[in-house]
Length: 409
Image 1 (cartoon, rainbow, N blue to C red):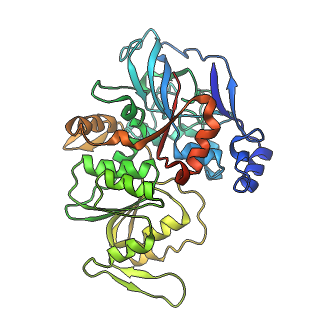
Image 2 (cartoon, rainbow, N blue to C red; image 1 turned 45 degrees about the vertical axis):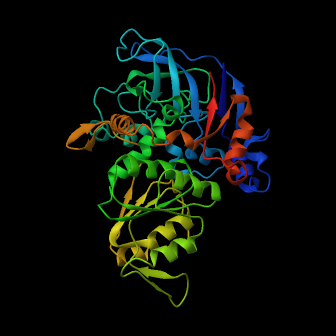
Image 3 (spheres, helix red, strand yellow; image 1 turned 90 degrees about the vertical axis):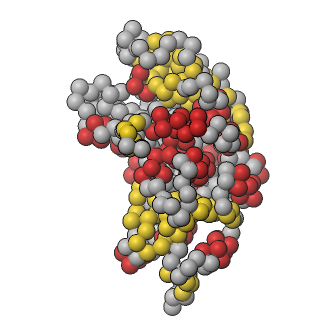
């Protein structure tokens, strides 16, 4: 079967890291670690495992972080190579182990890609897995059953969704209701990330909210705010006009592509003022009540810290790595609460109940079936078109891309 593999070597990584910006083919071409290969189809690992034929598999910002060499080296102990990428997956069950009871052959399923204690076959769960936070599993660095790997596609023993067949543990299966379209089902993973981020810090009524970013996760934050019917004012800052238009399509109150325009809007808030320091960029008294940074760059975090109102909340959703020359004065001087958010939960608290993030998501979508989530998908690519798929994500402005998918089987 065919699969896209990332074969890490230090020379290839160094070459793409040093010269990829001027010669982008180093990220995806012949000299790069990324290849479409023929491999043996995986077999079930036990009676509680099943096989899935992917229909769609998303290209995630974290996948691009690996391909473009932007992922922090601090996360390398929690990955193993080679990587068979792809963790946003919709597929059809093709084989089930003897003890699998929650799905059967022919079922349409999405996948929770986190390699939890349950997936690892541990008799005693770590504290995070007991709390339902499988994304924070203590054994992501490996144990006696599995090598390092936080998530499907980043562990060399479990093939990811950019492949024609995968095997998963039954605990990773998410049966997809009939009222969920294929496009939306293919985005259950990132939509769950956005919903979990908003549930980690839900704005109050009449709060002013800033969402920074033009990638999929920024729109899943906006979608979560709208699906939850949070009565807040949403401002969206992105880079390009097609990203601005998507924010407006999803229902934001204000959409801008220039930081200066966000500043002008923010200065209309009561008690918000701009101040000029002796050196450096302007600072503010006042600002937004909640800021969701869905980029995680030096510039986006700097904007978020400066624009969050004193005593309020900055939620870091984007996969920030090593950030240099960042002024942290705003955190202590303004008593900001910084919340990191990652993945989703099996034990989310919502309306007095304990549910999985996906169960809440399905309920919200069923209540608002006309909310335009499908419009987030802008491109489909076959596996053999993987180079163009990467280019479409690198050149988002040219392609007007937001969510890109591999269409596989």
